[in-house]
Amino acid sequence: MIEDILELSRKAGSLLKQRNLKLVTVESCTGGSLAKLITDIPGASNWFECGFTTYSNESKTKLVNVPAELIATQGAVSQKVALAMAKGGLATTTGDIAISTTGIAGPDGGTPEKPVGTVCFGFAAKDGTFSTDKQLFSGDRDAIRTQSIAHCLKCLCNYLETDHF
Image 1 (tube, rainbow, N blue to C red):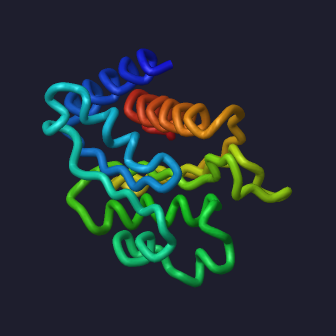
Image 2: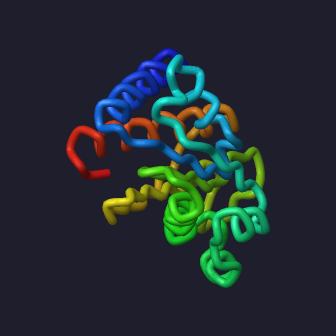
């Protein structure tokens, strides 16, 4: 799976570079792993602006301006919070596209409404395009995080090829 992710990272980097766009990541459940794998690709400084690891609710509010009220009413693991994270990442940087992750990687922390493996994604672009997604992944903590990263990169590549997240 890691080789597939590295290939997706290479593809995303190539597409970003071709379009002269910079990427921002705003991560919670993936803990900075998405940014790490993206920057493993040589030349990433040409298309990677920055990454935020907003693991706590407070950091989501302070670093990328997610309203505390939104977190209180929707929960940190929600599509609305994921979108606010992505939009906040764009608003606080000079990036062109932002991807966010927020979820429950386990092994505990799940509820009947949001079981372990629930991950929400936010996608935002300076051109006004935005989207959210919610997935339920299986496996252990590492597997859930790896699947989340792969999903982000697939969605990013899809957007860069079709202008749709």
